[in-house]
Amino acid sequence: MEEYKYYVGGEFRESKEKIEVINPATEEVFAKIFQASREDLDFAIEKAKIAKKEWKKVSFKERAKVLREIAKAILDNLQILAELETKEIGKPLKESLFVDVPLGADCFDYYASFLESLQEEVIQSELGIDLVKYEPYGVCGVYLPYNVPLMIFGFSCAGALAAGNSLIIKPSEYGSLSILELVKHLDKLDIPKGLINIITGHGETVGKYLAGSDTDIISFTGSRQTLKKIVAQSADNPKKIICELGGCNLTIIFSDADKERALQNILGSSFMKQGQMCIGTSLVLVEEGIYRGFVKELIEKTSKIKLGDPFNPTVGMGPLPSKEHLEDIHRRVEKLRAEGAKILCGGKPPEGRGYFYPSTIIEVRDVIYEEFFAPVILIKSFNKQEIEKIIGQNPTGLVTQIWTKDLDKANDLAKKANCGTVWINTFAQMTSQTPFGGIGESGWGRNLGKSGFFEYIQHKHIGIGFRRSPVEDWFGV
Ligand code: NAD
Image (tube, rainbow, N blue to C red; front, side, top):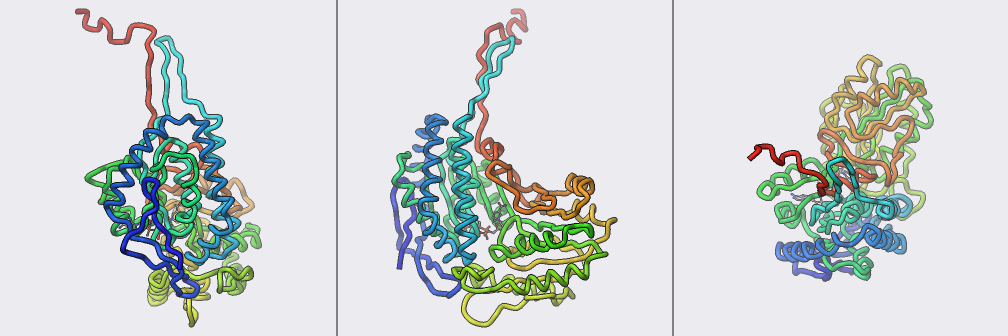
């Protein structure tokens, strides 16, 4: 059984305490990772502090070369990395192979191109010349969620590295293997030892230590509950936190929408990765005139999604990552049922091995802004008068989809939507160039695009005077 060591200061290390990695489709232990200690973290920070000084001096063009090599290392090892994500997390292989892992690589390629043409600012005025330098924060603590580890490695670490920071990465205990496999290849690159560190183990131990440690900035992707803990844990050592959380994403279907396309996009946005996508649909709102017919078709299509072995190419959904996650989801579904919500399909885990949960649609009477992060969506009808209020009051806006042929109406609603991204007649239209992040309870700060570089930069102004300064002779003494 393979054991995956963590990586600190350019050394692969192990500890006495091992954590079993379970294949959620079979419930078999197939690998082990190690619980890193506070001493390991201290060592990583010491080395990351040395590495940050070296890395900061490296020119943008030279940094670009390293980022390209990271992208190449991901793509050269695509098959094994994708298989590990599928085996550990349970999402179908075609998602890991064709979407998640390649997207991670693309982020490094994008920031390489960005750096190749980047110049710091020079402002000339009558007073003199002002240089605006792009300086890194220093050591960046990065938390990865379990669902798309290498994709979020790209989303957060490509911009942070491009900006000149060194990294201490804490992957989820449910999604550590792909990054631990990748780092075996990154170790061979000509980069300062200690520039990229990976510490594994439980959030409540090593994740907690990282929050309170002497890093200069934190990039967190995960749940709001954990963010609250990290904010508290870092209170004695405050620092900037960029955070990408989840949220209740609304998908709004007007009666004039292209229904077949809307249906297909609801299926994709609700049930890919077993519903574990931060941009996925949580609540579908269908205009009252078409509600019944639309729901009927949605149930028919949803019921055809095949649940099973995520390595089988005909399977649409694999298992959830853990027994705890499965039980928590089922408990929440049962609670809604007990409160009077109607389960239209799914809602009961199948018998047998594996942490499987079927695609589930629940009809609710009132708007509930809830993210399941599982193949469970809520559905409700709406009328034109109330939709603005429903959109505007969403406290957790990450993404909203609007489906209508009336672009004026869609654009008007998009402006009022309380969220970071609005997709009109489309879904997942995002690239490494487009800024991504939430507002309100779904996070702050942006990854990707130019914004995802400047989040990890501190601007430094150097003014070189050609004339007397504005205060010279102010007092005339
Ligand atoms: P999580 O909050 O449980 O874990 C995130 C990270 O925090 C992990 O590395 C974990 O080990 C660590 N952690 C857990 N407890 C900790 C503690 N007490 N102290 C310090 N660190 C701790 O999130 P998850 O279950 O891995 O991911 C699911 C959530 O992430 C969902 O809410 C989803 O919407 C969100 N998400 C958001 C995005 C985005 O880009 N906005 C992307 C993916 C996932």
